[in-house]
Image (cartoon, rainbow, N blue to C red):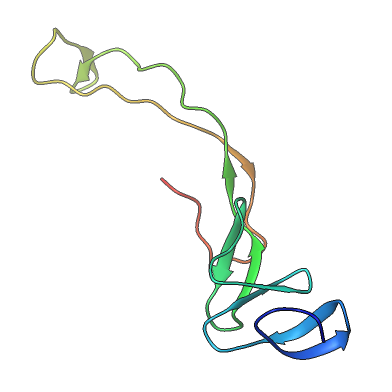
Length: 94
């Protein structure tokens, strides 16, 4: 096996089990998962994480369902989930 930090290989270039403390991702071993992927601790694998879109503009200030001035109200903004995570154990951010 030519893969660094690998305990067991399927072939010379594809790891099936990484050494302790390393995550498996597409036949390689990593200390942390690459961008866009989330660690699945139980299996020590990197899976596709949740992807969210851009934040919306801030909404108008409101309090008790009424438009308010610049004080004592609440403004909100949202973002949409672009891609749901591969596993239910990896939640999307708020």
